[in-house]
Amino acid sequence: MTGTTICPDPPAPDCDDQPAARAGRREWLGLGVLALPTILIGLDGTALHVAAPVLSADLNPSSSQLLWIIDVYGFVVAGLLVTMGTIGDRIGRRRLLLIGAAGFLAASVLAAFATSAGQLIAARALLGLAGATLMPSTLSLLSNMFRDPGQRRLAIAIWMTNFMVGGMAGPLIGGVLLEHFWWGSVFLIGVPPLIVLLVAGPLLLPEFRNPHAGRIDLLSVVLSVAAIVSVVYSVKETAKSGLQVSTLAIAAVGVALGVVFARRQLRLRDPLMDLRLFRRAAFSASLGAQTFGLYVLAAMQFLTVQYFQLVLGMTPLEAGLWMLPTMVMGIMGTLGAPWVVRVLQPGTAMTVGFAAAVPGLALMALSGRWPVVVGLAITSMGVQVVLALTYDLVVSSAPPERAGVASGMGETGTELGIALGIAIAGSLVTAVYRAGVTVPAGAPDSVRDTLGSAVSAAEHLPGPVAQQLLETARAAYTNGIQLAAVVSAVMIAILAVATAKLVRAG
Image (cartoon, rainbow, N blue to C red; front, side, top):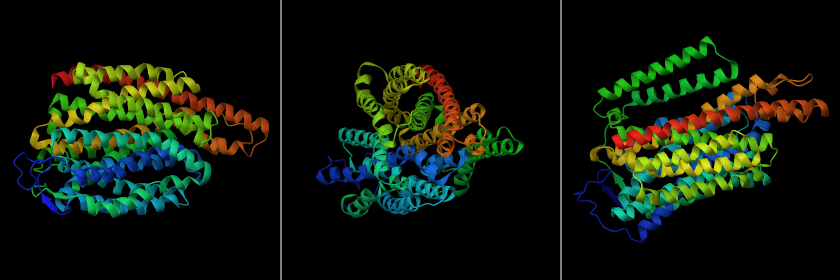
């Protein structure tokens, strides 16, 4: 099994190089190895959420720098996923996975010992470059290792569960580490499992290549990343400094680059993204539900962890523990989705999941410890029901010969939804915070930048001034989260109606 198999991805039924057969012990052990980077990717994103207040006090980033620290990883991953999938087709999925694991390990160490916000942003970007190799490689290897349909469905379900559990356990594990170590320790979580992957991967994982892989269009890669980064940068700067001609110009450039990218994809023989798939209503609805469902879930999880620590005054460990109900309910939603579709059509099941999340978001808008905890748990369960169904729908709604491309687009939607949720919702809360915070006499103007800055500054101010600052700053931040919850509830309600119609139409 350690040799190289040249076989299409997804494998064709008549592929002679890899006959359909039930997976044995080596394949299941290989699945355990593939679980390591999957869990790690989930952990890496959310563990940083709980460390954000601590690193803010140490590195003193601006509000826009803090958001870049959190989500530059996701934007780089989203821009490069499809590209890395094509590279894996050409050089081998196992080889790409191992190269990416080595790069991820090195970038994690750089991030852990960063001494400035700029260094940390650069290290996070390198993590995104390496992370873009991991997800498509693991899923493609699974599809080839488990040829029996029943075993493959089980293997993919385990793969999805590992990703979700990693993401939801991130705040708890991060909280435990921050109780005993410095903020950089959250970046070292992945070092031991990555070492195991680098040692065990060549022994347990087969190599697969696609001899018919399309060529890589570097201009499309540049256009897609530049369009995403330009638009998001303008959103963040607008939240920080208000509307300015320069930010509007950057946004316009980003939109124009996006249009050029789309037109180029329609002309290319081997497009980076096959936009013709969007003509299928079921594909568009499923991918949209996946992207915007993750947008809402990632945004509210990130904001909740900040709320627990900076407004309610919890320690990182306490904040992680209070996120446990969200993790449990999310797992229940994921595992319950297959049972739901036994009695409901997929489109109806997705509508029910989104509809269940709306009251949870409405509860979060009330603020307070218990409304936020219960509301986020309900939201997580409802949205996870949808997410458990969307990946299969994204792939199955595409023509069989385009299934590989569709899966790459689904993975891109996943990362883009997470990154956009943190960026846009974070910018919205920052704008509300800056508009509502009052700077008392004697307090530095930097307290208007982030709530973390205000909390840090209060430690060095006289008691009455510190109390006044914290009250106004926390109230302003809470107002921002309430608005973000209301906007998210409206978005989820619209998605509930859209999926009900479009999935059935497809």
